[in-house]
Image (cartoon, one colour):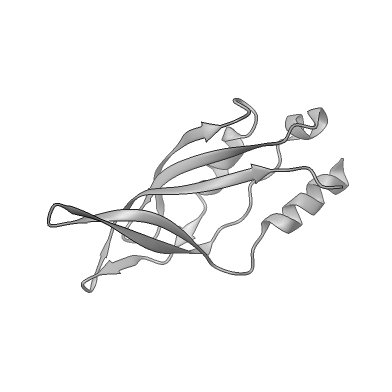
Length: 122
């Protein structure tokens, strides 16, 4: 089991930036924008889920501050309630984004979603 966990962790880290979708509000109009992740470690596979052989997913929604920090994350969907949420919340708070700049000013990007998939590997 420990080897499975280590393999999962190694596969979870990405060397390439990823892009997520969110929105900004300009003059009362909502505009869809993309924000670039510059640091996004993978979530740890919870030991209890490893022992039980549980797989699943969690979708988390949050805002990205003008400094590129994750703000106010919350779980919007999961297929295994109580299994993976704690790990996802610990991880998502460590993520960092390139600040989104609109008309030369860094702004908050709202309603960004990310999906974490927990899958055991052989």
